[in-house]
Length: 156
Image 1 (tube, rainbow, N blue to C red):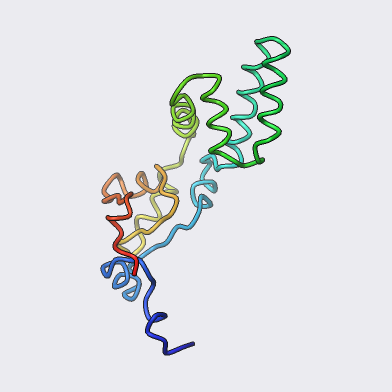
Image 2: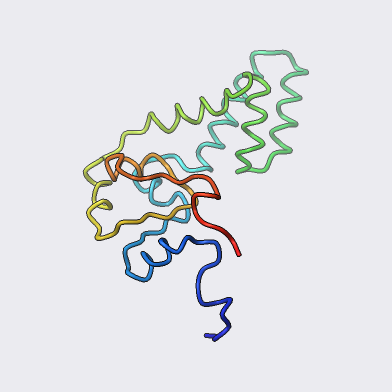
């Protein structure tokens, strides 16, 4: 532990969030583990589905397209969602990847009673780097969602 003033509060967090943490009224989500536990797809599964869809689309074309798709997929990292989305858009059109991801995430059956347990926790603030629909559903769409840097406070 240090007395250095730079270490006395988390940098970049709004004072309201810091106060909620101190009051034990905040819940942090740092990844997709919560959603995955309830059947939502996480990045690895979405990447696998992109790879399958791209391969299927390429198989409908000639050897040159199939080879191009295979090379593109080989160059993309296993869980490189951004690159796989670009490849998918190349074959399906602009913003097709966004629509595909949305369709994958809305197809999942979720036990809202089990998920709703999180909303019963004695907290009033949720902080996450990976917001997803599951959290919103757990709180019955009653959350104020901040998604821009300006909404979370300033970094010093």
